[in-house]
Length: 196
Image (cartoon, rainbow, N blue to C red):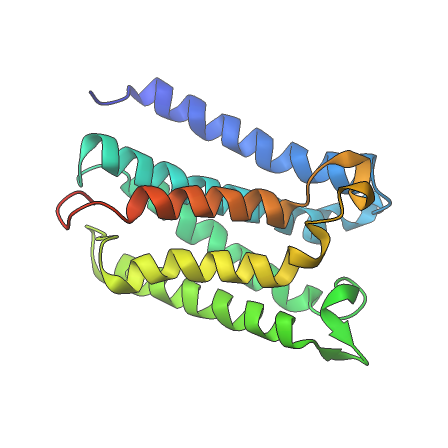
């Protein structure tokens, strides 16, 4: 059974609200991030939540209703991912991401994370540009989901296992997105080529 357009829009706007509110609460309300950093730093975290959530929804729709669905979610994934990459460029540096740097140089974990993020973006962007019918069962695209997980894990794992240090007791955005990505990978992996 296919979801109605109203149902689809409802899920979309719920994801939008979650993506906007979660980082605001964690970093500004419970944390110490100034509101002056909302336009780029906080919004970039919102894009992470939105992109991973949209990818989950794309896979969910295609698994439930077949290969003809989910393209709108994939479009949202690509737009939010592109924005995330572009916004991250001016933010990169010890001032915003102190934990990723040592002596003003990226740590090995940060470099692995950035490399995985770049490869994941390329894995999804190429088929999206070249085909109106995305096939998530190809090795490249399934690997892309795992690369997203690697990107998130290496950029944030150091803070995942110290709940006492979580701002307001709220899990980091990287952990939230990592768990969503793992669920997405599990949903993608066992299906034959004609499902997605």
